[in-house]
Image 1 (cartoon, rainbow, N blue to C red):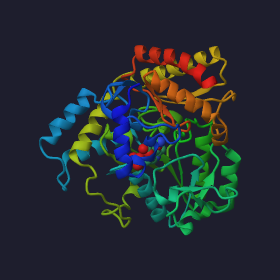
Image 2: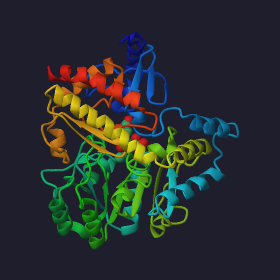
Image 3: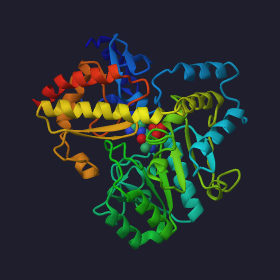
Length: 430
Ligand code: KE4
C-alpha cells in the first residue's frame, strides 16, 4: 500500500494537533503504525489520499448506516444549505426530527437536540441528578459515554468504593460520585443498589456494549437493571448513541423490550453531521430549560443542515426489511470470518447484534463480559488488523471497538473481506 501522502500529512498534523488527530482513536495508537488520511468516501468504501481503496467497517464510527455519502443524504444537505446553514431561531426541521424520534422510540415522549453523543449523555445525567435530587451515578466497566468528566472514571478497588479518575483533570470529588459495575453481572448490580440505591440518580448503560468490543446483554439482564432502578427510585438511562437505530429501528430498547427513563442518541441521527439528542418521559424532559430549571443549551443544536442530513438517513433506514438485511450482512461476515479462522487454526469468535459486530481472538465459546474481552489476544488482533488493511479492508483500529456494516456492504464486499481474512489469519497466527 502506497502511503507517502498520508505519512506527510500525519507528520504535519502531529505538529499542529494533539497526536495528529481530532479524536484519539483515529491515531492507530492501539494497533500501531500511522493512520491513513481519507480523500473521499462512497457507499462501503473509503479512498485515501494515496489512491488506496478500503472496504470500510467503521463507517465514521457509526453514522453511515446506509453507507458513506448516500445520494439522498447529500442531496438533503445541499438543498437545505442553500437556504442557510444555521438561523439561531427555531426551524421546521427540528420539529420534524423530534416527531420522528418520538415515533421511532416511544419512550422518548420529548427530546432535546444537541451536537454530539457526549453532550447528550452529560446532559442526561445532569437531568437525572436535577430531577432526583441525588448525586451518584452508576456506569459499567468498558462502557464509554463520551468524554464528560463523570464518565472518565473506573472502579476503585471494588464496585462499592468510590470511582477513580481515568484522566487527569477529572476532580476526585466528582469521580467519587461515579460507581462502576461489571457488565452482565446480575448479583453485583443487586448488591450495589441494596448498598446505596437511595443515593443513585441514574444508571447509564450501553445496552449492547460497543466500546469494549461488542458485548450483548445476557438474557434478562437489562430487565433486571430496569427493576432495580424502579425499586430504588433511580432513573435508567440507555446510551443508544451507537445502538440507536442500528440494532433495531427502535434501538436496543425495542430489540430487548426494556423501556428506559431517558435515552441518548448520536451518530446515525446526524447522518454524518454533528448531531446528538437526549429524550425520555415528558415529566422529566419538561424540567429542562427553558421549560424547567435544569440548564442545557447549544448554539448549533438542531441546525437545519444537520437535521436534514439526519432526517434523510432516518428515512433511508425505515425502508421495509432494512434491519433484517443489515443483520444478515453481519451474520454472513462473522460466519465467514469464523470459518476462515477455523481453517487457519486460530482461536477466534465473534458477536453480532443487528448492524454491529465484534471480533475476538479468544478461545472462549462466547465473550460477553469486560474481563473476557480484555483477556483476548490483542497482539494477534493488531497483526490481523494490519494484514487486512494491506488487503484493502479497514476494521476498527482497536481490539476493543465494535465494527459496523451498512446497507451499502453487498455480497461482493463481504466475500472480498472473507477472502482477505483467509490470508490475514495466517499472518495473525505468526
Ligand atoms: P461523541 O461525543 O463522540 O459523538 O459520542 C460519544 C459516545 C457516547 N456514547 C457511546 C455509546 C459512544 O459509542 C460514543 C462515541 N463512540 C466512539 C467510538 N467508540 C466515537 C469515536 C471517537 O471517539 O472518535
